[in-house]
Length: 326
Image (tube, rainbow, N blue to C red; front, side):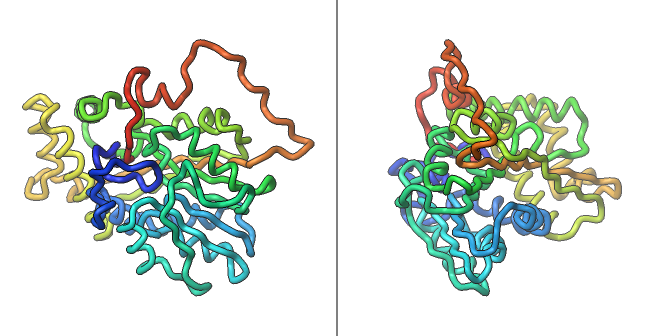
């Protein structure tokens, strides 16, 4: 799992002027994201292969990032389909143009904002959004915009993770709890709230508030045991580096020492070198429809209460809107 980014773009929302990607550079989380895609390619491709996506469909990937999912989705849409990728980071779009071709031709790539997509109502048969709701200041508003551009009989798929159950490693439970508390403290210190770490556990509610009917919800696991392929070792090296840079100053000295004994490559106790190493990485896939068929009435809207919208609860009641990155 990545974290809400202080200045890096999320690929969809309105970006602060200081955003490095707006100046043509990839954001800092890009190497970790690329490593995860490389290590989990087979499992992520299997998720796309199981989507309710018919041949000949018009498909939108937003935000498309580096374009990892574009050829996978294009293969499902087939020769008669149309593939469109949207991202607000020009550096990501440049990378997607270079790497995201398919036998059915290059995708159409656009620089646009998820809150104001440049498409007419009901343009797409299928909309894909991977690991991005956690990035958004207002995920419900983003889902409503995705719903607007999706045909009434179309589908929207969201793939998201949860900061507490994203990467499960065989370290002591008490150390895991300390690391998790430190990560929450680090993100709250930078952004005012750690609530955005847990988007995956709120997908049903987000869909409901956006007026989407849930078709299916499933947990998707990537499981590994020793010996690890090199791609997984690269992913873990980048994950450990990402983790330590965020939690070290929030850990007690003893916990910090215990953590680095397990994640430093030169350590005799380096976790991935253990013959008993095991790991699970979890994602949640939520499928929704833009409109219910006549035989399947919409859920009754909840009556007004004093409970704030989920957008506000995820970012903290009093926290200002911010640009987040997972």
